Image (cartoon, rainbow, N blue to C red):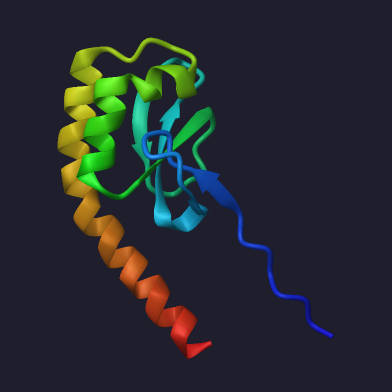
Length: 107
């Protein structure tokens, strides 16, 4: 009997919804304290997850959710940089997610 693979769940730091890890965008604080978007989900460091909605990102920015999740003050310039990156990766992320959904349907 083949057991179904367990899907890792993570919580969006903004809307607090639990979702499959691959449907969330990971923001990572690297060991040298840089804060970046990690589309691979494999970079070393402390991660925080946001669902791929700009509204969630704006909420996280307003409530400083990333500061708490990453246990470090995230400067406003980093939020601004992330916001630009976020809009850029949102398209890539959604394309990847759609591709993954297609794969799931074929299985």
